[in-house]
Image (cartoon, rainbow, N blue to C red; front, side, top):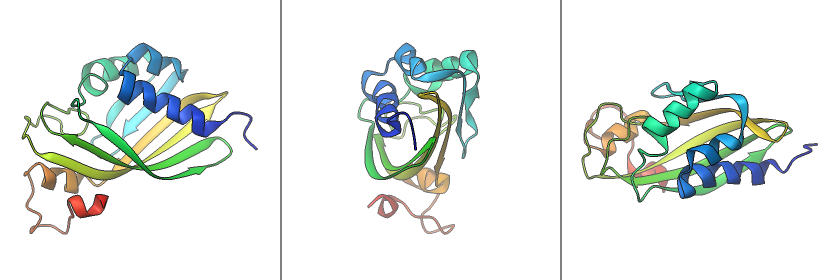
Length: 157
């Protein structure tokens, strides 16, 4: 049985990342040497300094102002939370962690993603984020939805 309310800790971490957009407050929710990996693009960081640089340069400050996370489901284990969410934004700025090197297209993106978050002593120790990158590319017009077997908005509905 967990000794910490992992769901509440996960919510606090996301609040700092996406609502307050405060890098130091986000880092305060994590262990001294955290690991974060956005698997489709292999962006993120290992260790405090590398991850803080990622949050400052690419992630927290780089998300468009209308970015939202909508909960779909959550599984809480002994030391881990798995969240399925709908990640939505309008591609009005470069989103290097999701679309490295892609100039803003102005298109709306709405995709499902899954985050597995492991906790140690009430702090985020490791976070892996998974999503269908082909669907992201289709939403911004870089892949034709009629080409490879990918889906767009319907995956988020």
